[in-house]
Image (tube, rainbow over all chains, first blue to last red):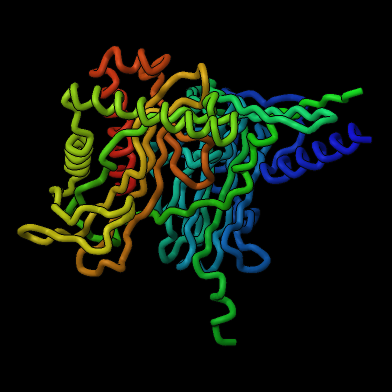
Length: 221
Length: 234
């Protein structure tokens, strides 16, 4: 009985942690895709297919993650073929901060290039490589939109694909031993080298942070 | 019959539930800042040397007391070694920030302010001579060395909050962010800098054996934090 109870508690805790981290069990760990040879890609993104960054109701943080695959939409951008995702910015951007880039996967990172577009799809702003930073589990650039900005385009950066991001992860692991007489915990430190390769495939991620979620209620009409 | 069950790793992902920190990105074109005053007293007086999962930390109150004594002794030895090497973390950081700002086309100088009572932003800023367009306030909340636990290497660590404030209106924050170099668990939204593998020490004796290298590790970490902070002002 005790054994069953402990198992239940562990299962619930593991499920909770999984939910927090937003992960699910995956049998195959995706690896980097370092070649992309699509031909005849259009030179303009399909703005009609833009993914909305407007949440159903105003909230402080709204994150959209999009798998990018070799078979996803393709674009000829800066003279090179690249997979892409285009997002439509919310109509009211004044109070919002955008964080645009790629999620860190266990072995790879989609190599993001970010371009802000106006309503006609013309570039209004690009970001230098050193403006991209690791923020927790995301490799991204952060910005506030300017008047006239309407879309954000995420393409692959060919010069980044194939390069490695080497990092050192430190943390602790706690082991708990349950016996009929009680339980005891022991915590040990972890220090491990990690390596991820920038890839043509991966997960693009955009977060929209709203500093004024009461705005809609304040607006007349 | 005792039934034994071992559960490992449940604590590992708890930080995933924490809310996301949201920085304030800088818009250089809109800010029109040419000159920057750097608030002084950026660093705590002493470096730390923390072993997170120490033996003592696993033995309740008695272990915690023993651990505190060991840590105090270790930190004194580390700070003595850094002083013996002539290492002035504050001066090195300030010089790096000035150099980095200069490289980005800003006029920069350090401004003397009142000593910080806590490791938080200053409430107001002073300037000697011409008033700059904005003040860069870098608050290092912790720096030194960190080991994840017994038997794990000691690596430099730095945690800082940074902001740029308009000199004409101190309530106008032009940029704000948090930067962590070699922290425990990446925090959502916080700029995460990985440790430089060149600076890893086996234990206390290894750290104290070469004070110049010990200081070099901290300087390298502070340089990366300074460069990242200034990089936010591109």
